[in-house]
Length: 73
Image 1 (cartoon, one colour):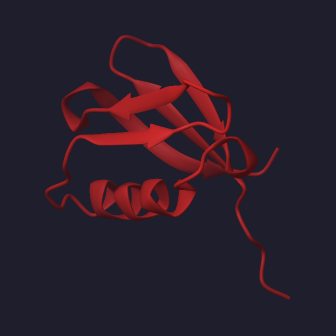
Image 2 (cartoon, helix red, strand yellow; image 1 turned 30 degrees about the vertical axis):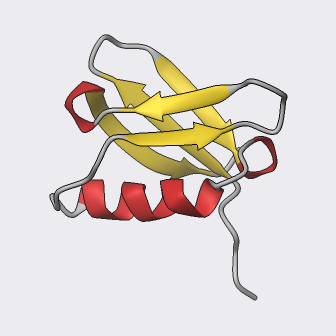
């Protein structure tokens, strides 16, 4: 059985932690791709994701991210 990771934890350099769930973000797969490239040390662009709530958005800049990982909570 394949385990699908539905949550990603982003820790920013200022200590702020954000948990992003698959069901709350429209382009979650873009975040997964970004996570994999970031953790390999590859160049990653500024990423903006749209939330499922009207008008909600999340932007991630590699210069502000300390770590990004899948979590199983």
